[in-house]
Image 1 (cartoon, rainbow, N blue to C red):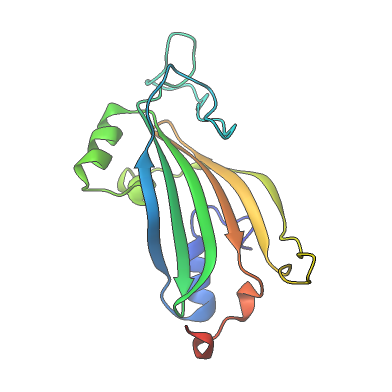
Image 2: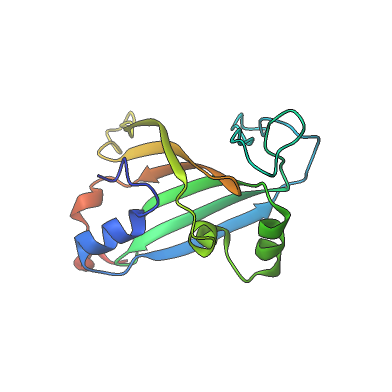
Amino acid sequence: MAVTANGNLQRLFSSYYDAPVVVEMVHCMRKQQHQQDDEDEDGVNVNNNNNNNNNNNDGTASIHAVWDRRVLLKIFNQTFCTADSVIVVHSQEVEDLVESGKVGIGQLFRHFNILPEFNLLEAGLTPTTTNGDGGGGFWRYYTLESDLVTCSIREVFCNDVWNLSPSDEK
């Protein structure tokens, strides 16, 4: 279920554990704008090719702003997921709203009542280290796309993510 969750991951874990999920912001940094590059320095596609009103003359979506973001998802005060995102805004209205601080990047789809297109690009199990640590967790890489915003997200889930308990709180 978690591998294919399309924007409702917090609700899924909160329901499973009957406990609130806390989102802890590690960083959210606006990137410097260069020419309309199709990829950022990490090779992540930052251009949304949907046909919309924010298009350049060549049919690709314009890029108004790009943010790098990392959050930790926690339950019982334990990090169960680290999410790294590249958020690309294709609208001046959305850029202004984010800059004003009235709506966080994570709330943009809900604020504009947009159901983004979910595309699971890759998923896998976390590897075990040479000393036997690790393994048992999983990761996924996906995009959420709309005419206004495109998010490329990589999430890494902890080992034993479905067996957390309040007694393990740190």
